[in-house]
Length: 346
Image 1 (cartoon, helix red, strand yellow):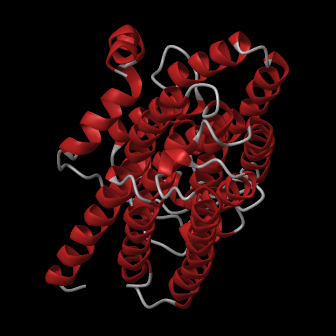
Image 2: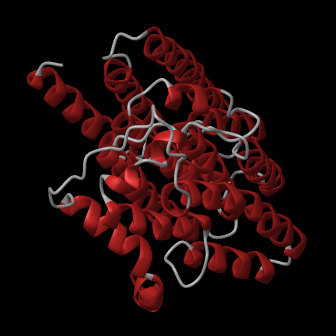
Image 3: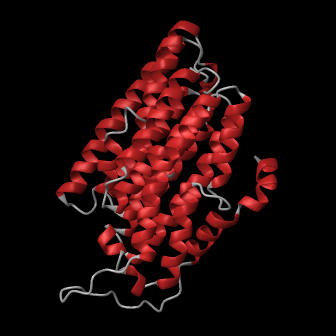
């Protein structure tokens, strides 16, 4: 792709995200979401592969429908209350429609169907953008409107997302699809807490972004798109492979790694809010996710492929690891001890 075109799309993504997260008016927020959608479409479809074109089409249709619902929700609220302010959403129908729209934007169950397919049709870097940056504006809108949304609806969606994200990821062999179901599962954790402690939901999103970026960039460094490829990467970048094991365990939420922090705080907050059954269910459902992270980790670092005649090892790569990967991986592993400082800042 032309570098100038890449620059324009990158600037458009930055503009769209900034516009949505900084606006008070629904029309401005909607404009930002539209700019984002239009900027990411050429990046998804740039390979001209039929799967990439299919992914871009699916993404466009779902995001256009969700944006129309955001507009419909805000107009209905303005019609009944005379308010265009994002934080003044009070009409019950508007609240319900907005919940559906944001669930479609984010890929929460039962509106998750598009996300794994779109991620599978994209490259790893575009997949990283779709899993992190593109979810930031809808998460911000969820944060701003959280007092108006119904906790029961969000909790139901959250538990279903954690269940389906874990369950569907079990038998996948493509790394991008596994990370897509991992994203759906993590969104469940954010949705369950957003009505009770919106700041905690944002903290969860930031840490999820950190860990997912580390995993995506590690996979991009070794060009691993399938589990079978991941088995042969130990010859190419042994140290990165060993660290990838720990990053995946952090994404699964095992102590004493960074990923344990949001899960611990969310379960604590849910217990304080007297919804301990929901906390117990979502904690048990995270074991499903742990299984497929362990499977990824096992393929990456513990198992060796069979030495058949047609098996080809990758060349050892003597180049130093990308600084960004090193920084993100270190943060993905070691932020738990400084959690009091993180909580004081947030």
